[in-house]
Image (cartoon, rainbow, N blue to C red):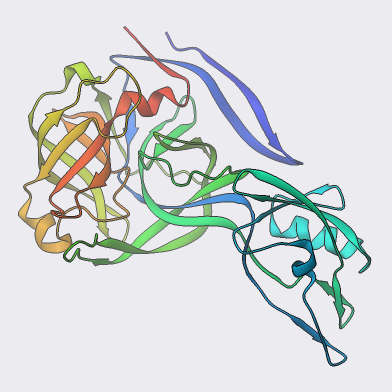
Amino acid sequence: MKKLYAFMMIFGFFLMGFHVYAYDLGKNDKIYVSGESIGIKLNSGVEVVGTFAIKENGKLYKPWEDAGIIEGDKIIALNQRNIEKTDDLLTALRLTGGKPCSITYLRNTKEYKATITPAVKDNSYSLGLYIKDSILGVGTLTYYIKEANIFGSLGHKITNDTFYSGEIYEAKVDSIVKPVRDQAGEKKATIGKDKIGTVVENSITGVHGNGTSKMDISDMETLNFKTRDEIRLGDAQIWTCLEGNKVEKFDIKVTGLAKQNAKDIKGITFEVVDEDLISRAGGIVQGMSGSPIVQDNALIGAVTHVSIKDSTLAYGIYIEWMFADMGIEIVE
């Protein structure tokens, strides 16, 4: 029997969907297994990536200089208004009217407070800062549980930074850059505009969350899953995209299974033996993180890392660790 407990997560005034605390998944239950490429966006706060001077009436103004702000700092408040994204900062800056105001920022984990005076030019205000407020990358969708509206992807953490919200989008692979000596290859992909999921967890085991109405399961297969004590050495497959949004299946051999009693991202060691994958991609490349690992027609894990020395040698995470971070409990 399945049980689902949830509560609404709200960031600011934006409804973020359901964050599942507990969901019972039976050993005979099937889940949707993907392998589709996705764009992953995490709104990680307003970070300073550069500074510049504003010229007005023949003078150069550097508002950031007296405040002590440098590249890498994160702005968290302006005039006591919380700052989570660029729009927040622009709104707070406009409300200052160009007058001196308080600014709070983080450098590493230490908080600093200062006074800053915006520069005024052409009836607009500037702090002389180049900023970014999100991290965008390409990964792979691992699984989706329709009944609980839960997805799991990537198999490892995308960033150590705190994030405020996040989304996943469909992506189409345009080309593969093959690995060269001591340098991993990568998928080049175009990220679509339709949001297919909302991220609620960026944890050691991957990027997890809830699907939207745009989540398309029509091409996904439903499979059982195996826990770490049921996996064997030998033949298996990874499911991933090399062209467009077509999921293909490639042969691997599981060569090692770590004994783990706690979450870790390198439980499964494997070797790519599929000549087609080696010919077309050179082995495992960046963007394949999260690609499902399937054995005996059951989901056992997801790709997480590749050897820089040999792109046919790689690692995966046990699928039960990915389940755990979304409160999914495996029951008999």
